[in-house]
Image (cartoon, rainbow, N blue to C red):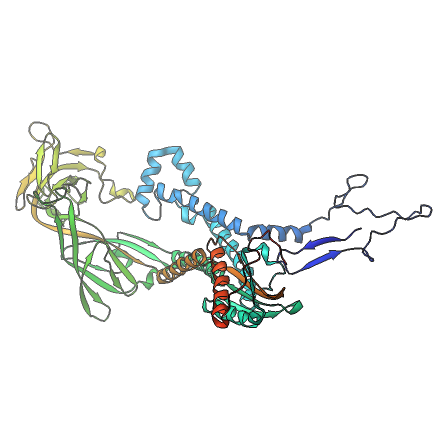
Length: 583
């Protein structure tokens, strides 16, 4: 077999693969023997018995699957799948966030809703398929990171790479002929200049009296890449830990009333799997005042558009110390073990209902639910199961600035400029004795009979503050006053600060990996005809359009410095193109 040159990608040298004497082995001249001759071919045999590939076995199969799972390509695919899997969580109501809305969706969609419920679309973030993707992504990232960390640590401790034997194949190759007496000085000057620009450098002695500087920088790029992936794992861990140990609850407080941080005081409460309600921090919150401002007629903006919402609260802690704060939208109140966010607000008219026997069956402020219009038209629902002779329900609307026209009762402006109540009274069985929980803000009127007047039509009660109305059956309804309420969201996530820290670290690592180029630069000075030959070249590990210009600028700077130092002009470059004469 004749010698064949094989050049390594790093250009460290040339190697020859030959027979023992550098020639092809002699062909046999004697009679043929049973010993077969060897065919030098890279193609597998396909005739006869063919090639028998070894079986992977269980260990080999598991190792193959592990390598596939821990590849960066798989991690990216899993990350994309995780984002896609989270989409149903924003399209469909989630049982853990709003169980009433989930039940309503199921009731309205029949069989389709049952199929989605069986697939876990109403509990996306706790479903088995979402958890499986999450865990696989977690394992894939760790499997990607751990080997790369070891390799990167070795790179940080390693010496800069050896100068390749042929620099002309690399980026920005520049060749300049210098006087022989400058050969010793230019290498030290090159090392000094490269170190000033944050390169790791090393001077090497080479054959034939040549000397070179090998320089490398940009390892921080890989450090940033690893920081990003490690921080991403940290974010995933913190999100999972937060979901297990967090709690979130909603509460509505009327002006002048208080809320104690106990489980029975919440309108709704969602704890994490590892959270114990007994660990709720003890404090009490009193709503002193709620203020809302809106765009007035003649002002810039849409009339009735809200300008600000402010809730003045007094917090009483376990030791009896009180603090006064103002909670605003996007400006929560941070307490020990809880954060309090202002979510909504509305009106709470004070209404008293008396049954025909003269017994007060409902009294006090009633939380109304805004209907969604700009005027804050709000729904009123009062259930009086103790009324006699029949259970009573009062339903209707509260109108901050009310009117009744062909559109029906509605409010013209969200502020309480002309507050009114428009109500009807219904009697019958409220269904509260069935044991099935009911929404306090809803009532099924189909099972009830409205109280009618002399004309046979349901009586529409229209009340202003301080007024009272008596129905034909003796039931009375009075509008005693008006207060406001505020809805708050209380939440606590012990991993919240860690999540933010890892997210910032991931952002910083990503910036490093994107904007720091990794490059290598080599400077060689070797004896030449009538002087010394200076060669400079570089290699980029990623897209680095400025490298070629920087390499040529370094070569020109080194030549100029030696020219000024020795008072002579360097000889012109013999060739500065990759295809020129290498000598």
